[in-house]
Amino acid sequence: MKAVGVIVEYNPFHNGHLHHAQQARAESGADLVIAVMSGQFLQRGEPAFADKWTRTQMALDAGIDLVIELPYVYATAQASDFAKGGIALLEAIGCSSFCFGSEQGSIAPFLNSRELLTERSAEYQHLIHEAVQTGISYPKALNNAYLSLTGNGAGFADLTQPNNILGFHYLEAAQNSGSSMKPLTIQRIGANYHDPIRAGLPIASATGIREAFFKGESVDELSSYMPESSILPLKNMEQEYGTFGSWEQFYPLLRFTVLREGPANLKRFAEITEGIENLIYQSAKTANDFESFISLVKSKRFTRTRIQRMLTHIYTGFTWQLLRSFEAPGYIRLLGMSATGRSYLNQTKKNIKLPLVSRAAELHDEMGKLDIHATAMYLQGMGSADLKKEFTTPPIYRG
Image 1 (cartoon, rainbow, N blue to C red):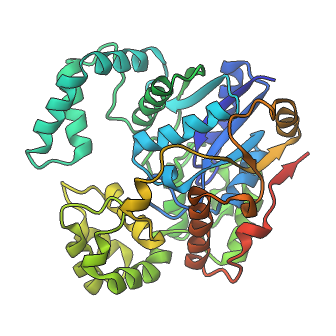
Image 2 (cartoon, rainbow, N blue to C red; image 1 turned 90 degrees about the vertical axis):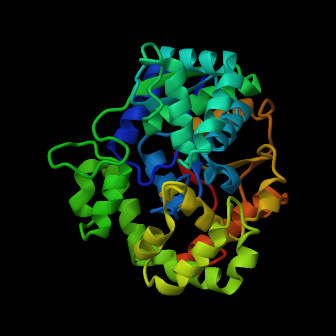
């Protein structure tokens, strides 16, 4: 059986995700779609809107055949490491291709950009270093250096666009690892990554859907932007927790953690640099809600996303020492499968390059223990009484 892989968050699963999955299957000619999905914390440094089991249900009910978890260490990382983890898992489980949505819509510009930056790597790194010295953020420095090399941009990927950036890093990770998977991309349609909901447009961004909910719209009122199969899992989660995941929900526990640790200890946590621990500590003293807090901390030097990743690591206790101890995924954590997905695993299990884990109790290495801990911290933030849910929830099956 032939599999195409996608690297996703599904936060929540909406009509654009459905289009991506369907087109990935069509473009690749694959028999099944395998999704590597972030767990309880996400790449932009946020608690997941819906927990990983809810998102797995939504994915399977919309036609995804296998859902495997992207470990915390990669799910909460900068784009290059996020891509590295996802691509490694898709390669390990035997995908013959991977497909990402992009603003570009064509794979050739990504290949051209990758070739250019490989050939002129030293010059590119020098330009980045010079730009950072001016005091701008690292993402802005990357973009300025890239524009200097590509000139008018003709024939190259536009790396100012969020999905293009991720797509480039997927391609880079695959080439660096010597992967045999064929890269594919499809045109992102409808709303852009950060766009709010627009009436009459059936494809909204996940960001827009989340923002609309927290402004008071119900799951039913947002149902036109999601497949029908997404609605019941979201309602069930809302009934279980009374809300959905957000930093506003988690802020009291985050604030407590920051104030308890103090600046000296905050420096231990991953991505905390350049004395920002002092600003984080002082801001937590005065800010009574998350938006007030983040507005005090973010700056041109430190983007909101970068700050949120720091806060995620503070909240979960993920240190620099832990971050530096991991080199590659050591297992494949199965979250759910369709009948086709089960058949694929039965046929290919001897060729899968990493241990296939279906229960949390089977996770014995440090990366797996970190995933278990991250889930417990997520459930605590959601006010759950069942912190053992990670151990009691089996892979979801849709026959």
